[in-house]
Every structure is written in structure tokens, then in C-alpha cells.
Image 1: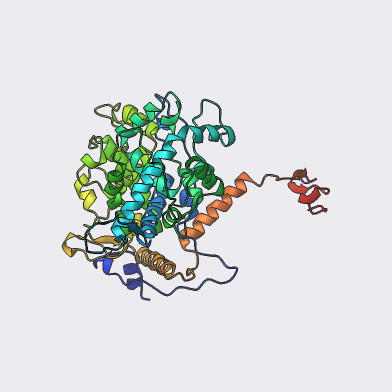
Image 2: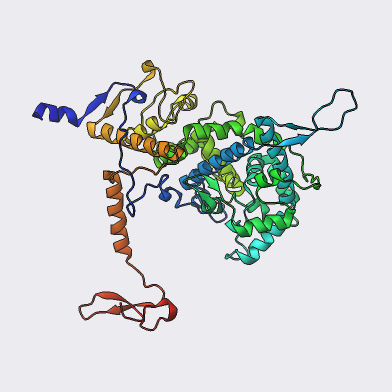
Length: 498
């Protein structure tokens, strides 16, 4: 290659529409015993913790939630909700018709349309939620005795063995997002369950029961038994619908709320999440970081009008973080009171001045109109200020036809463009294999993955390896330390020095 071509290849201006890029599609098949492809990267869920109760005057305790990890689990849960709807639509459900007394004979049962099957499941889920909510005190009391390891001052949170079934979790999800009604319902329980308002949506437990490869929600056996004992029903609502009992109690909600309508209202958000499919995106971590900055910037700008529905054209990322935040009512209330309402009129240290924020002084409506597909989000990992108007409809998470006149010129090096294309091509190939139920392809580690692995090894070396069960440190004559294993370690040991 000539010197001129080398210099020209160092920095390039990409003029073509990124959505029309030709992506690589040939990748290696997995080898037995070799490294397997795991998407999403489990590291993105590492910080799914429930922080302690926020303290007045200590902003760091108020800003501890939500993390990008909470938003990532939120995305996975939305996929599980969608899969639940698909399962309901696939049901072969018949509804008995009342007897008629005219001369024209009619069938004794009728098959429901797909949309009606989903509506039937929602109505049943609301009833099942009413039973679970009426016993929430028993659930939390049991959890406080058998799974709570904190002091009495620390609020009880639900571990995976106390999770409700997915359909009940869906109703709880939409109920908790209706802040005023949910707060009233919690206060009505306050005498019996004083810590109910401190209950966070159980993100760590949800993460632990979702198969991130299939996006399936698998309730542990203990949680299944707990729900069955409380309700007398199967924890699997699909199995329950296939063979319902002859009679059931018609449980009433102890508060005024149309939870069926609330679930229907949130269907569009579930669909939007699946269309973007950020949970499988090569830019997942960067996308959620940018969404977090956008959300905080939005709140501090005073643009939030109380409810998400009152806001004009919120972007998907903003809505995702806003919902995630509201699903821990105690933290959200403290944030609004201490951070949003308590900030000075002119605060030069506002997070809006963060040099890493590409959203500073941005028009919220313009942000909402930006394309959020895989391609554009992956470009923003390398070129944060990249903007491209979203098309009216996107048929896939990474490619769509866009208006070239609205395109911003890309200032990326040839190596950057090559890596972006490879990431997009590989993640598309993985998603295609997953949908075909074929083995997931593999590729050699990227430069970024190698660097991350190197840093992780250095950190581990600094921390060191601590002795485990039946192991101890031995100081050698040269001053170095070596881990030894006890000779007589019983069934745990090997019977020899290591």
C-alpha cells in the first residue's frame, strides 16, 4: 500500500447511509469444548443490586439507583412479557357458550381469537395478582425470617424463591408504574406491612430466573410451591388455562384500579422494546449509559411533567430509565424531592455540564426522533454526537431505510468502520442462528475484548487469590506466599498436599 493510501486510510469520512452498509456474514461454527458465544454479556447485569434506603442530604445514596444493570434486566423482562403473550396467542382455548332457546342450533363452545386469548390471560392474571397482593404480608414475613440477612432497619426485599409467576409479575409491574394508585395501595397496607413502600421491584431475583439465551422466565420450585399454597392455583398460567378448575373464587382488588387497562396500555412499550431489541445489541452497555445521561439531563432540566404519559415524545431509552427508576418508589420519591426539586436555579456543577454527555443542550423532541437501531447505537459508541433521524418504521433492529438528507457525516477511521461492521455482522449472525435454533457462531476476540481481559487479569493479580475451604497460606523462605490445601480434608480434600 502506498504512503498516500495509508495516510488516507487513517481517517475517513463515511458518506453512505450506515443502514445500507454491507455487513460481513461468514463466521465460524462453535467447536466442542471451545469458547461459546454469550449474548448479552453477563457483565452487563453485574450491578443489579438493591441499594440501601436513601438518606436525606446524601446525594450519593439517592443516585445509587437505577444502574445500567437494572435497565438491562428490565429489557430482558420485557422480552419475557412478550413471550408470555405469544404463548397465550398459541393457546387453543374454547369458551363455553350459554344455552339458547331458539330453533337454530348453535355450537356449545367457540374458539377465541388470538387477541381474545391474550385478553383472557390478562383478566385471569389480574385476579391472580389480587390474591397474591392480598397475601403480600405473608410473603414478606416469610422472606424476613428465611431469606433476609440484614438488620430490622433494612427493608425486606424479595429473593428468587419469593417471586410471583410471570403473569402476576406483569400486573405488579404496570401497577407499580401507576405511582399515585400504587402509593395509596401501599399506605393502605402500612399498618400490617410498614415496609411495603420500601419494596423495590426485585431486579436481582428476576435476573437470576431468566434464561438470557431464550429469554424465558423460570420460576424456582420453592416460589412455585409458595404461590400454589397461597392461591390454590398452578404457578404456570398457561397450564392453568389448559385445564382450569370447575370453580374459582372471584377475588376483588382492595383498591380502585383498572389493571386490565393498565396492562393493555403498556403493550406498545413491550413491542417497541422487542423491535429495537437492545438486549441483543452490540452496543447494549453504551446505549444504556447514554440513556441514563439523557434521563438525568431530562429530569434536571425540569422537562419532566410528573408522569411519562404527560411528556411529549419521550425516547425509548428515556422511558426505559424513567420506568426503571419509578419501580423503586422510595428511591424515586427521594430523587424528585432532594435532587430535582432541591437543585439551585443556577447550578454550575449540574450533570448537564459533564464532558461525556453528548446530549447537552439537545432538543428533547429531536432526541426522541433519533434512530435507535443497532447500527446507529454502535456508531455512537465511537462517535457519540452522531445523529440520524429515525425512519417511520423499522423492520429489523439494525437496518432500515432513512432519509439521506437527514444524515450526519461520519468522521471515523477505516479501522473503526471495519470494527463496527464486524460487530454488527456478528451480532446479526448470532441472532439469526438463535431464531433458527442453530448453534451460535463464534469469532476471535476483538481488540476491545482482549484489552478488557487484560485489565481484568491485572485487577485479579492485584487483589490476589484468597484461600478457600481447607486451604491456607504458607510463607516460603524467599518471602513469597503459596496456597496449600490441608492433607486430611475429609470428603472435600484429595488427601495430598497441593
